[in-house]
Image (cartoon, rainbow, N blue to C red; front, side):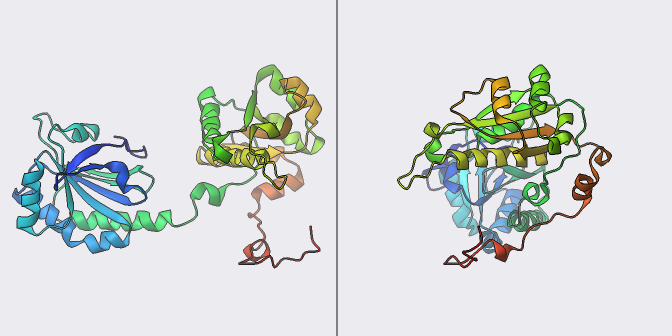
Length: 337
């Protein structure tokens, strides 16, 4: 099991002999601690330390689950005799232990703890731990993670519509990663109405010829992705709303955030000759060419005009939240569009 990867679902018997699946704990943090054998001094101390701190873990929306090769009847005796409050799970065949790579060369479980977030992603691990102070350390890390996860996501916080591009090429792997992120966006009834056309090489140069003068900077891009769709590909609602544009917007936002996380620039533009681009990329006339997303690596702001360079290097400018948010009723100036 690798850090920052989603933990696969698994099923084990609880100390009460009931089948429990990992996904049953979705939307909670999970502290998963592996121990070698019930009632041994070190494992007992660790289990008691976690059990004593359960109220603190609960305040942070976390559960503590112990896993050992012991049978459920031995685990339930362990819990009752030691006055434990944590849940225990039986892994006699060591399937889950192998998944987390906590078995040593002698086939014994190495005492280890894993912290999994509310999305089921492994965020922290401790291997071959010493019991003294371990539960406190886990609690401190959980608190830090819990606080960080309640803040605005870093890619959202720092994303900017930057224009200073390098001419360095992007790998197909990098472009595919952006497209995968876009394709994971939500859509009405999972219709996935977006259609992406990646322009590279000769086609890329032809698309660049269709850009407006103000988008001169985009001609340094190593990739341009055309986003197109058709109203029949998504929901048509009773009040006349066509949902395909909204869903495609969600997909583009996912792409932008993934690009930000990868240290790339992804900048959607509206200034281009749509008919020329559609002709170049063989997009049918009855499709809407919603946007072109300019993709590249960060470059020298000196390649930009004075106006664009000032924006590039200046502070992020957003309207005050109260100008765009109302509570319970529309309270904006109805005369303004």
